[in-house]
Structures are given as structure tokens and as C-alpha cells.
Image (cartoon, rainbow, N blue to C red):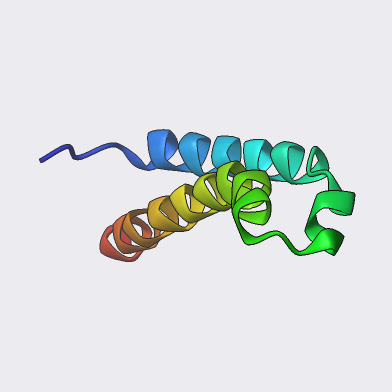
Length: 69
């Protein structure tokens, strides 16, 4: 299994948060207001993936920080 360093995890976490925020700003909100479920899923798919990846990098980062202390 891949054991990244704390700096790598921090970089990946910040990168995924930034990408999630950028892709969240690109959502076409008019499509969301119409309520078509397939189109809504397509619009929010990438921001959700980026933000979930950011949260998945938080867990090992916090574990490494606690292990160092």
C-alpha cells in the first residue's frame, strides 16, 4: 500500500480542495433548478469527486500528524 509523506498528503488535500472549488463554480445552476436527475448528476459529479478525494486525504494526514506527536 502507498504510504505518502505528510507534505504529499497536505499538497494533495489542498489541490483537491482547490479543484473542487473551481469545478463547483463551473456548475450550470439553471440545469439544477430544472430538476432533471441525470443532468444534475452530471453537473455535480466532478466537484463531489474532488471534495471526497480531499476528505479521503484528510484522514491519513491527521493520523500521521497524531503519530508524530
